[in-house]
Length: 501
Image (cartoon, rainbow, N blue to C red):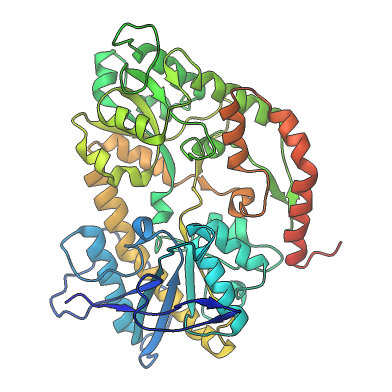
């Protein structure tokens, strides 16, 4: 039986929150079911268990998660309603059942659904709601999850507990994302974390796909060996795109979805398709000083070189950098009219991927040049992170530490192999070479702090979209014009973490 209960927030009124049943348009809860017929959790490698003692009994304690991310993207990550036979769904279900039984707790996920202008933007619905709850002292929810860049703002605005001080929580374990720990921790403080308990930990990694038939028709070797030899660069992609291009209708004009293009994308503020190049070309804006605080760390010459390379690719003889919309080039790739396309890995689960007649292969996004030390993967900012609202009482923090450790460890043991080893590398791709490329993609992820703090920083992937969309390399002048405000914003974040002026 589906067990969908409604919960709360009929309105946001003068800093208080009205709690009411029947407000399904605001929050929907999805509670783990209790059916007796269960399958064993999927395991393809030895379990990496946490260090929690045996025999923990939290006496039916409720773990109420407030989820402030897009339900259509992240709706299957925390709770699912029932077993369906789908490997990912059932791994999530079994993980929750195992953790509930192990700790004697009840896990419920309340998913925010913003409607009718209640919130300024759906991405910010969760942070606005949580701010109201914390300000009013509401303790309905003891765990919060949402996208990374809005949650980071809650941290430096003092709406969250410092995870580094939560008893029983060990963020050094392999089932936590260490690249997030490094990026998000400042002066002994860290307010968000993630790992394989978030499927977005994989799904929002950026990559490329290529059409195998088009490569074969043009006598072009699959680029797998080029990747392994370190030669998968912007120049390499451009060269392939030029070999593939065919003016199908003979009108002398390159047109997405009509001609056969080598590569197409949309460099425009409303599209995140080119964001992966920020990572793959090793663009960085923020480092850390000797005391662990953030510092301005921009290499202007490197930015200029990257923009030159990207403009070359997007305006090459076989490429289109300004498709009318994202659907245009995605449909062209699906229909066999395009050789290469940028994606996030969740595209592999999409209807377009399933509808393709041609086979595709998976590649990392290209490096700037062969001198770059390695391939890098951008984790796009919509992946879920976990945090503890400041309204949670100190007495509950040790239990939350226990739950988060057990939840993360069980996710590593069951959900990660179900998604990565079974669904991603065996179901969504059909060759061992693509599976090897996925290892390169997922093992080299980083998040620039400017992207983690996107909601306050004025220089990030949005800037790259603007520059490329203009068609001119204005990187040097744009960086110069933004540096003062960027430093001001950086100082505010550091001050929030305790740095004195």
